[in-house]
Image (cartoon, rainbow, N blue to C red; front, side):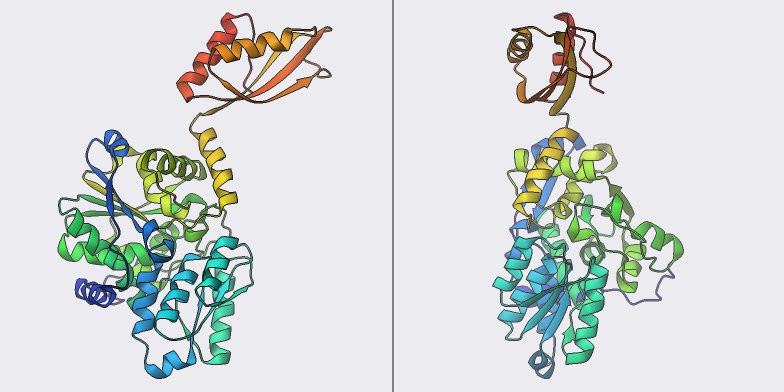
Length: 408
């Protein structure tokens, strides 16, 4: 296990100092009440909307804090960073406002809107490597060769202190909070939030949430040192980090009460929930805290504040995630039925579905499967429903009408 005190932790005073530095630089993002989540949890739930922060995520806080504390000579050399997108944008804008240059290495899979935004803020964005780990390695080599200062995405006291200002704000906005839920990749945000929250309110429960396909903290906490993942697979590129840092691991071990994971289905449902019920555009990484609440609403003592960490989502990915989220929420129903192979059979089936208020998205005929008797045709129908109860109603009504629908 991680030895307490072996690594100095960021203090509440450090976060307070970062807050003074960032005053007038970053936005004090709103705290929005979610009645729909409150009904599930059984008490007040608030969303801390860092998706409305400058650059679309919390990352500007840590990047500006770190770069502002460089010496004039260091700033003259420029800075270099590695990121899947949000840290890249934070570093790019902070560097521009502080009068230095930024070079950012991004994985080749980085969403194009994030690459374009990084370049739009004035940084030299370079694509290379399949993962963030490889991008960080390339950035470190570039720093060594050029003398530029490497701005780590999470494992530095100034970065953690800057991110921790999210925690100070939410405490001011919701003094009665009992649980704070934070998405977690490398751990910079949850480390800073935990440092800020525990300094003022040690009774508040802090929960870190990772994508199940990129959850490096559980094994690292058990081993007592960072344990790199051998594989990662998640749509949440913003928290797809192969291993925590020594500093963030020490913070999570010492200050965070629980680490949870959420599935891709959980993330999809939460993203769709935020769009439909909270009217918030959120990226998959940014919605991890909401996903945890939806997956286990009874596991979080209220009042709860869930940090919505970012909203920089590729529109193409958004379309895919919305479809996945609708499927995960039971809003899609795919079924097969056998009908007589004669004129009017398909029309009769579609008429039945129309009467059930099920929206037909696609229809396919199959005449060659071994399941069919002579004179039969199999119809595969893909439907949009109002949810699981409506889907059950559709299946029951079709059965009552003489069809034998299958969902296999």
